[in-house]
Image 1 (cartoon, rainbow, N blue to C red):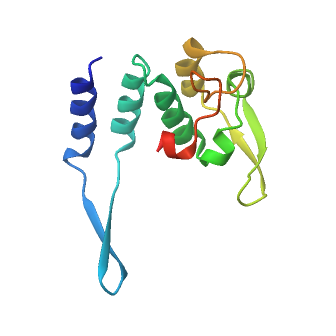
Image 2: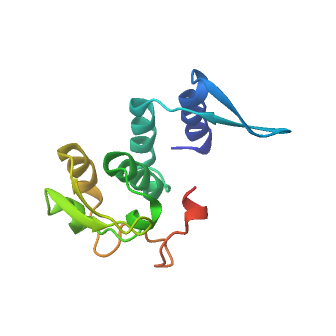
Length: 133
């Protein structure tokens, strides 16, 4: 997939989304956009067949589990694919949480299984939050 096709897909996701403006303080505004689940999922699935495969896996795992980066970065493929649920102690809140693993997520990720952590770069290091964002 060429960069123009990826850009086209990305722009189509945001084309019809509502823009919410929030006042953050007296003289500035911040905007946020909501995303349609199905559009985001399709965008992430399209990324799986590009050199940005890890980004697609990150998005899909994040939307299906609801975990933050700090917890996602510790997951392995076997955590997701070999279990019906995982028990994790969230780093930010220190709460223990059980997360049921969707069959759909397992089916999508089964073709990309590798040993070790899910979000490793070509240099065998964990992607930083800045890189994934």
